Image (cartoon, rainbow, N blue to C red; front, top):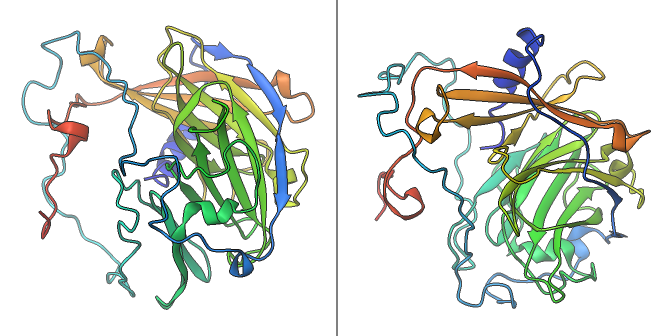
Length: 357
């Protein structure tokens, strides 16, 4: 779900950026990681087995904060079927998967699963709520499943004893490293954190650099993207008011285990609509040096907008003068009419899957 934005990046770089910038923001915070630690090799760390419940979710249910955009235009388009919905399967050049293995099951007994995974040259790494496992490329399980908190075992702070979910794992192909992340929100002192771990090498069973960045409010729904100058991320922030946030984490320093790695945070003001965003992520050849990271979110005309649209943002990070960084809207792409509302089922559980209950 995190790797579909390369096409958007290509579109954004090919269109004219001369469109008037209607929204532009400066950072609300620049801060260093509050805590840092280098771990022993993961293969030697004390394992926390799935099913060992911690204080975070005693009832086995991970509550999701939900902000639903309100329908204010009753006759919004489309009036009928989606005009550009694909009705037939096109031709494909691939021959199907070479290996098909069962991933991590619901070993912690929680809902929703928030499945996530990435593949590198030699490994497949999967994280879910609230566990992870690692395989080789032949499908042999090398590690796990274990609780996600195993990856931060021994990393002492307000998050100690939590395993709060929304995990992310990405393979950084340019650096040959792994990035894993999870928030900590049910802390002992009421603070909110994003825990990030960077593998010391391309082997996820080796040592990791652990970082903890504090947030001003509940940093829900994190999404990350690998870029040359930073690990970029988006969040939905819940506090006195609901808003979106965009952040850059200092990749160069994190890759060498520098405890002074910084975060540039844009915590959006009230009455703004920059939420449910996604950052761009690249695999393979990197974009030209100095290319800003592009973010995207969508808007439905049923929510009061003139048309259904995709909104493109750029995040320009200046690590020499971090408060000079900019997050700004650069393009609005009108689309064919679409309907964002799926169904009335709780958490949109209305898409049937074959051979399931």
